[in-house]
Length: 265
Picture 1 (cartoon, rainbow, N blue to C red):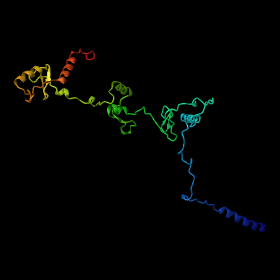
Picture 2 (picture 1 turned 180 degrees about the vertical axis):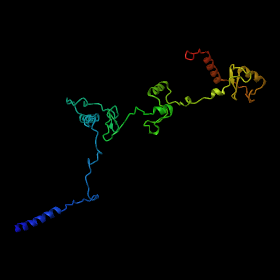
Picture 3 (picture 1 turned 60 degrees about the horizontal axis):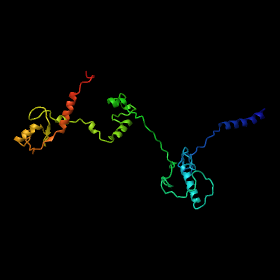
Picture 4 (picture 1 turned 90 degrees about the vertical axis):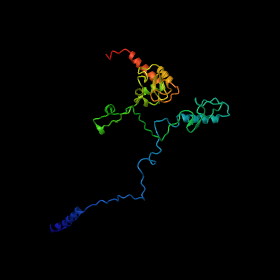
């Protein structure tokens, strides 16, 4: 029994040593070593030569068909007809077309038929038919959301497509519309009575000094003095028809002769 106990003792101590052993993981250096070249993720050219797969294949588009036709025409030049059908685009031509877009141009962007789409150009186009303008701010100049409103705060006027088309038909497109928003003061500058007879104008005229008189009143005063009745400026007998005042009088008379509408009643 003693021998067996002594024999078991070393085994017990060995198991304790095995249990007390700690396994430590070797830490790798996180620093990048510039001397080690690693392969990048993705394609080797990083997609620089990626092609657009939705267009017609390069060997089947209009440009490829035209180039094959040009090559066949060069091979058949000066040869007799061998009665071989080579396709609808490859009939032998006995007259060489000119180097134009209507002929056989095939250089750069000047070529016959549709131009081949670029392979490496990816254009994203969005047609914005929804202006996203804040209706409250456009109509009233106030928005309850303030700066947090997601719509555009803009009060400028935009013309619709039908308005632009109508202006194009009438020949008014591109003109200056500033006069439509200006308050004209011409009506305030025009007098409503003659300075001489103190009555309504009859055949009104205007002098060089921009004063208005009746034609008969101006001629009678000219017999007495060649100067203006108002500012005493030399008129030299120049009396021109007051077209602006005549137009204003005609407009006023037309408005007076027009019967009142039912809405006004």
